Length: 275
Ligand SMILES: [Fe+2]
Image (cartoon, rainbow, N blue to C red):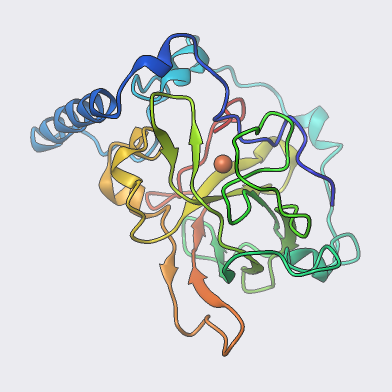
């Protein structure tokens, strides 16, 4: 496994000019204003907003990055000739264990994360490539652009992948990531999270999202998490602690299902955004 490349790096550390002057109180006030406006729209019969706002002002860099033109549909026929066809020989089962990629044990809390990948009708999505990347237990990524003063772990790279089973199950063994600071505003911290990537049936359907951990005290303060204005949609990004996944004297366990389509769809990032 290689360290993260630029494409897959969590880009939260990029400085947005002038943004660091904002206080958490100011950012939280803006989040509150937007959420209250959304609640009022809902109360008046407005639609449910299950996706993040692309130009969510408290998340400063979204203002620079969000699309300003309508999306265009293109004929996918040509590119689909190059569709991936992953077989079980291509992805080794050991790649699903991020704690055994080096000679020693990584530092931190060993966890299992498991769940099902489902379509909008609740049917399992089988043989699906699921990739994850994450910070280590100290909240540090292996990447030249992550220079915050937390230790790297020589026994943890933070990248893994697996294929779903015939029943749509995936399972990773990893280390619980730490929260980390970013430069959206003064004293901005991201809640602990694991990045997930899924390819539907071809590369043109790649979807990227983040999984969070229950009860994180940073949820209310994080403009990325809060850029989804609907509480139910935000809740779908939070894993559940599951004692049946926890294993004796080895790892605590979390359950997180991913729904690709339909009204319970898990929020997926747009292709050209990095968080
Ligand atoms: Fe991240």
